[in-house]
Amino acid sequence: MEDIINTYKNDPESVYHTWFLNNDDRLKAFRSIRKSLAKVIDEIEEGKFGNDFKGSSLETVVTAISEQKQIFEGAAHAFFWKPKLRIPDIYENEANKKAFGRFLKACLNATNEKQVLDEIRELNGYNIKGLGPAVANIIYFLHPTLFPPFNTAIVKGFNLLFSQKIKLGSWPEYLKMREIILFKNQEYRNMLSKDLGAFAGLLFEIGSNRLVIDENAKLVLQNELDKQVKAIARRHKEVEKDMAEENSHSEMQYDLAKLGRALGYKVWIARNDHKRKWNGVSLGELSIKHLELNHVPPSVYGTISLIDVLWLGNGNNIVSGFEVEKSTTIYSGILRLNDLSLSIEKDCRLYLVAPEKREKEIQAQLLRPSFKKADSVPISYILFKDLRCDCDAMCKFGNGLSVLDKISKSV
Image (cartoon, rainbow, N blue to C red; front, top):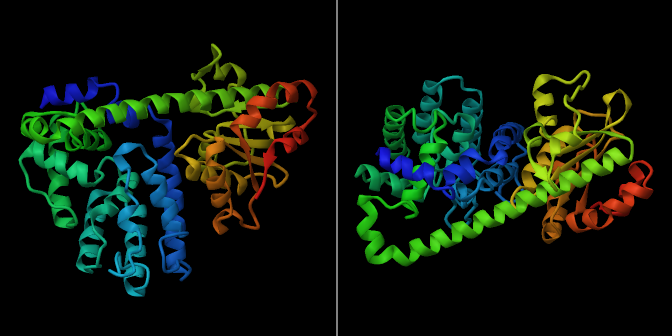
């Protein structure tokens, strides 16, 4: 087991490195998912949830989860409304919808393991058609040290590693798997993490045949060798793509910081990005060292301090906020800007800065009713290519926020 864990940890392209350790978006997702889940609960309680997954507040939550690298790819599928099968039966059946809402609320507010286990057993007792342990992926983002994620590859890896026969779609099977994971994670606690995402990542790598152990070696050698080679090549390509996106992300933050300073504003770079570099310059060198905001609650301050770039005027009032998005984080970026919009003065301007290939998706997301509330600041967007092309000219000739009107777009 120690050899397997070391192999997993020493592979720079394993999800341990690309998702669990070196991924700021993973940490940001916990806050966004909790906040968005509260909206799902409110809509169910108020009878506003609707009868389809598409366009619902639940889609916002689950999509934010499925954006979390390879390990959660496909997490949304279990929640798609399949009209012919009437599953999962939480859209048209009001009693089941209410039960699901109560379950989510109880898990969100739970303070210990027993409370969540009691709610799982109660939900399982309703026998809601098509609503299985895929919900555990939501619970993980509420209680990451107590409940592991759950999908086909994780279950396959678990069964191979521990010679079990855990089945998909069963809460009792999930709870059995969870007990073994908790026991083993405690046994090897000094090698992994209290956060069960690290252990789930190990199982995911085994289940997807990227990490070969005795139990799956024959399978890999006989029928899966080509798949394994393709999986490794695909992962390598994904890692290279992620690195390119990280570079673009830093480049856009650098340009926004440079532009803000040229226009006479103080600039704040997200606190977890100060050590990132572009053109040999640490982004923290372009940022004020401490973000001082008056009359902002600690929970809101934590969200605002993670916004990618802020421009501040005299008195530390926020005049503009920017979220720089990569190819998989449109949802979460809009959510953070939307949260910010409810906490600041209405004369502030908010922008999503994103790759041009995602423009149509950005437009569709910004048109969602939940992002066009009357009490929130409108969000515009700027494309990478436009900021790259015009940044130097705006730095030289710009005078105030109006300089962004030429390159920003609204829906």
